Length: 219
Image 1 (cartoon, rainbow, N blue to C red):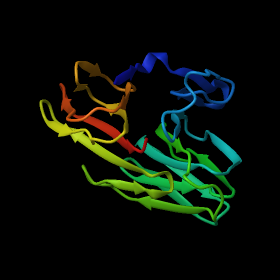
Image 2 (cartoon, rainbow, N blue to C red):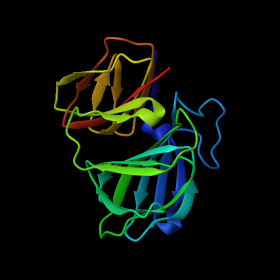
Image 3 (cartoon, rainbow, N blue to C red):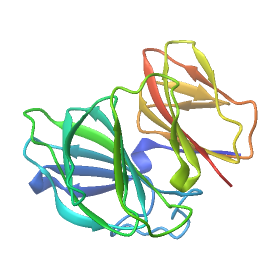
């Protein structure tokens, strides 16, 4: 089964006065939909747009695997593990909140910042928080997230180029940029597909360069 969710149907959040614009693909914060709480271990897929100087002040997380993908601009991150980094487009950032961590996320640059943040439930709660950044991850290089039993694949496709969708119990596809086709569905930026029990699927690039995040997920 392939369930396509359109960009325009995401819940609009954030704080416009503070320079924060958010789009939520799952129930999040004040937005509650009992039929859209999660997909496998995926709890959230938020698109955040921060104006220069805007950001999220220090706040806590626990028992959550947080993966961030910068689309444009630079994200400044500081957390209670003592790390302070700048995450740029093409970098994969992973914060394992484990038993508890606090962090700050800001746009300290001069240009607007857009990033995707995906939250996954861990297989086992607790533990010590950890932080990883993979700079400039290459196309088709998987990033393993064993804490959630998941694997992230980054796909960049030219017009007409094809790539296999993992034959996993569940697959979550999010289009960052460009157009792609999966099965009979055409996906544009911000669209996603939740795939269950399918094998032999392909992503096909459409007009212009496409960038797609593909989560290979357990049942």
